[in-house]
Image 1 (cartoon, rainbow, N blue to C red):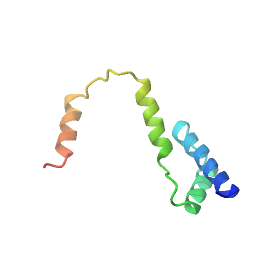
Image 2 (cartoon, one colour):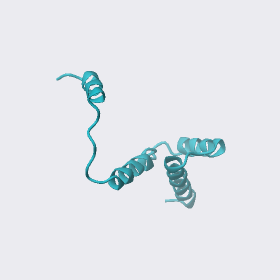
Image 3 (cartoon, rainbow, N blue to C red):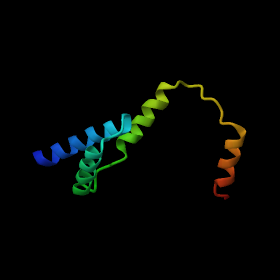
Length: 81
């Protein structure tokens, strides 16, 4: 892997981590967009999945059930087999 590509991937990961945790400035959003255009095969959702995983792990094992009204909306929108 070239140093330039490695630097680009490291910078994308840094920007994606910041985006998942804090959000990005307009300049950072543009930088991320340009980097992702130059590396279209990069997994752009990796940090969002990681942030969701960390969040779910931190909330404990006992999740409260969804309210019945939300459960009904989800069921109504689900495809029927």
